Amino acid sequence: LIPIGVLLSVLMVGLVMWSLRRRLSPLGELEIAVRKREFIVHYQPIIELASGNCIGAEALVRWMRPDGSLVLPDLFVPLAEDSGLILAITDQVIDEVIKDLGVLLVNDRSVHVAVNLGADDIRTGRIIDVLQQALARSGVEAAQIWLEATERGFINVLPARLTLGNARALGHAVVIDDFGTGYSSLSHLQSLPLDALKIDKTFIDTIGTDSAISSVTPHIIGMARTLFLKIVAEGVETEEQAEYLRRQKVDYAQGWLYAMPMPAAAFIAFHRQNRSA
Ligand code: C2E
Ligand code: CA
Ligand code: CA
Ligand code: CA
Image (cartoon, rainbow, N blue to C red; front, side, top):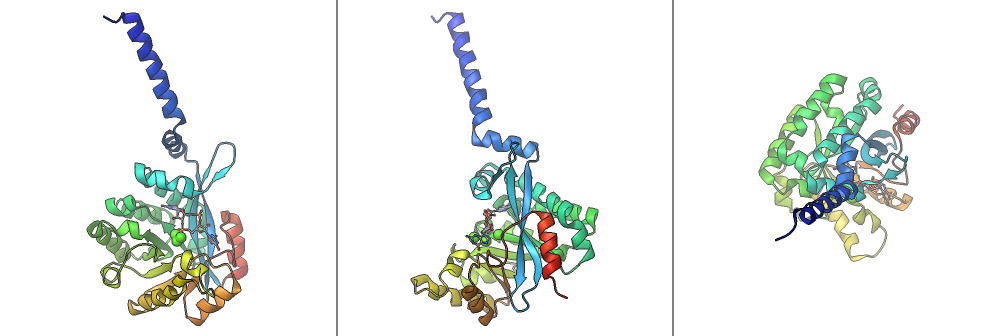
């Protein structure tokens, strides 16, 4: 028989360890960050290649720790996706976008912001209500908010078709993100409700090199053409890449060649300098 005192102290130690682990685990920390709304958004300008004008931005989330340091999304979005916290983070991103850029968006209807969706946002379809409320509150038009979904977001094909089809019916543009890194075939793409295709940086990196995958880029562009999709190139770093993309009549580009992701005030200034006359 175990004395009750020993049993109790073992229980106590276990309880303390459990709460410590919980407090210190990455997931516990992320839960607290969600509750404390520690997420901010940086904006990376999107450039129309033919004119060189800035026509909008991609919203990229950052976790601002209480000490003021910024954590990049690659370090917490995967955990947020696996744990379901991504739903609350997407809500905060949409709130921030409207707070940061609502005035600009209402004053200039040609500006748009691309928001990244998690697979759960698409699967549950909850995102539609969240967007509609944000738009009703702010007067921003649905057409000004583009939605980026990775191929992962399309794994559950039926809910994806429903959610993204609804989003398009409301006026949003739907962009398939990181295109080329997954398994989408032409026939699969054809069945999805899409407006644009974003060529992943991996392919942009190979422009002008003799890497084996450099020959894939023209095929991706051709595929987008066949489906009448707009084309966005991400991760454009060199003038040579931009020149190639312009020659291929790619519509839009983003990358360090033009600008890095930046806080809202800096983006508003950038847009003022680089918008169409
Ligand atoms: P992504 O959607 O492919 O976003 C592009 C990433 O490439 C961004 O990294 C951006 O800062 C970076 N980038 C842009 N131009 C260049 C360039 O010229 N060179 C290089 N080397 N990198 C460039 P970031 O901001 O760290 O975001 C990483 C990923 O995290 C994103 O990849 C996206 O998948 C995810 N993410 C970011 N924000 C959100 C969000 O609000 N929600 C969700 N669900 N995912 C997000
Ligand atoms: Ca994206
Ligand atoms: Ca991307
Ligand atoms: Ca990418």
